[in-house]
Image (cartoon, rainbow, N blue to C red; front, side, top):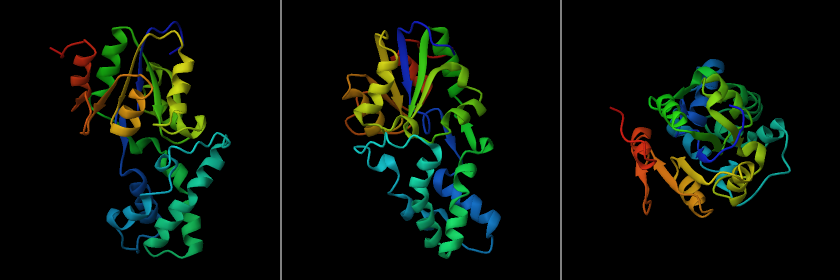
Length: 238
């Protein structure tokens, strides 16, 4: 979608809000292990403890604008994957080799899926003159993933933290989106994380709606995107 005059703007989170990946990071490592070392016994529960820290969104107060290259961004994450792989029994050299496969495996288009209500919601909101951007704590290849899912044409811009150097709820992330659309006067944030999406947006004077998850002290929350449309004044589908 080419950027024109934008008045009504929705800032969307991506993963967990518009789409999801099979198994996310743990699932990605399992796919690699099953293909390369099927004799090793492991589970998501085995990998989980090693994936609870180290990602840039675990320390959103720390910006990383100095990392402008996709390879450098992935290299920052490599120790996390190596640690997890060694945790299920791999030696250092094996872990390093398989960790290098994570970027391509994680971004495989057939591992990503839209939620059932995503396409209908984007179509309906666009017909009611809402413009859309994505602001996500995500990988450098997010735009390619969105393209592969067939929804890129709905979005004026796609902002991924890997490229802008800020993770939500850092104000720099929201500032990046707002500065790209200074003429927008009616702006909402939609996401599934009560802190990164909702609290982060509201602290930057953007009203927000929590979807698909529950959060304490969240004013607006909906089980799905159809319910979310009611808050924006579209009503429920007939």
